[in-house]
Image (cartoon, rainbow, N blue to C red; front, top):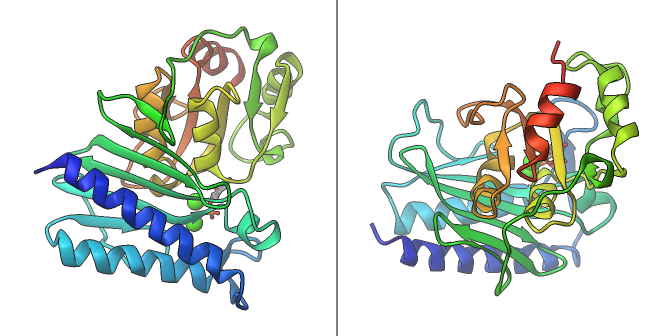
Length: 263
Ligand code: IPD
Ligand code: CA
Ligand code: CA
């Protein structure tokens, strides 16, 4: 297996898909909802997913591809080469803002993240990493993350976890958001992971994400020394949904121990 060739191939697919998405704004976009009225999908999510699947199946027939809109493979183990793809992470932003959404892709070999990509489509910014070879923001190498005290940290978190909810003790989350310097919510888990990896925010927390939201970002985060786990402190599960936290190295234990009480 030639990972360098796969890396070049994946980058060119991502750039081509990004172009398709930008061009799609010239036409009417069909919007549908899935599990609930706010869980949105468009014809472009589906078309971009199919574009990746058709190419990968033709050029790498033994690779599996697991993707949000369900046109890919269903897997019950992480054996072999698996692509985890979210064709548009941040569909609500895609529809409402026409910015702040990303293509998220992670390529894993026997469960180990080898290549990771987050492409902020409208900014034309590609965050990417190869295991043990460092992480990059476009052509610029991303430095190792330094420590930041919680009082100076900006945390990515959705307001839904600060109000009473079924998954986490929101009083503790209120303590966390009161103690830190500020909070942000960008509406794309992949972009939030990219922002932690590039030091723009200091942590990102979510109670429920899918493998395609985080697989690529985890590879990038690990290359800069960020800690990415589920909220039990374990390696995130990639065969189903899981909770998620990614932080600068010093904030992980502090946040999990003092501020996260799962229900
Ligand atoms: C969503 C975004 C959002 C996160 C949701 C995800 P989608 O992905 O990443 O920020 O809070 O949990 O489902 O549906 O836009 O691909
Ligand atoms: Ca997503
Ligand atoms: Ca999506």
